[in-house]
Length: 107
Length: 152
Image (cartoon, rainbow over the protein chains, first blue to last red):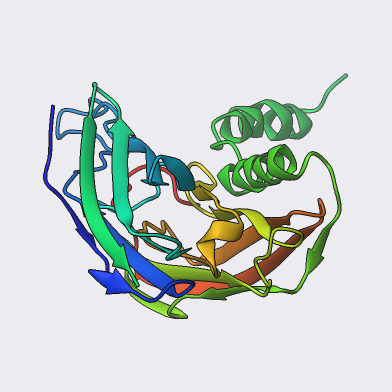
């Protein structure tokens, strides 16, 4: 299963600058606590893990729970150390796994 | 000999008590304490350093912007290792746990949460020296996140 994700961060930064990264994944984040009109529980379907790596080094990781709203937004910061690739990975229930990458040039 | 009045008082009211729902509020308090203990491993949690930014009056509990910042220089020697966000009244106390390090530059994480009911939102930060710091904010929710059963 795949989904749409989007990541926003500056294209370039000065060395040592702290940049903010905003990530958004399109996902229902079904809590597993809701019921249908017939009273059956709707099974849980959420994103459980998010990881950001910067040139292969993990810089941020988050564990998500049903209390995170639908289309989870996660925003965090990192230090621009060197030019390279930032990779983002979301993993969830029912085999959900999406990756996205972005380039950052550091001067 | 048991009087008719005592008999009715006892056996007439017992089933009514038996049908009372379990105390959900107390259960959630216990779940919250357990969740926090799991994070801290029983270590003392001090108030301070952490600050939660959240609207105090929430119209729609389904998407509540939460931002947590921690006062820390974020150096190799002294940084925030993890930030955990909890709510008091949700069926599960956990919202989000973030692992960060000196490469974050600033100790900050923000997200959007579901909040079931008026109550407290708690953030706990674990620092590199092993200490735990927290902040607690009370919020008022007018439209709860979708939950039909048992919000007492």
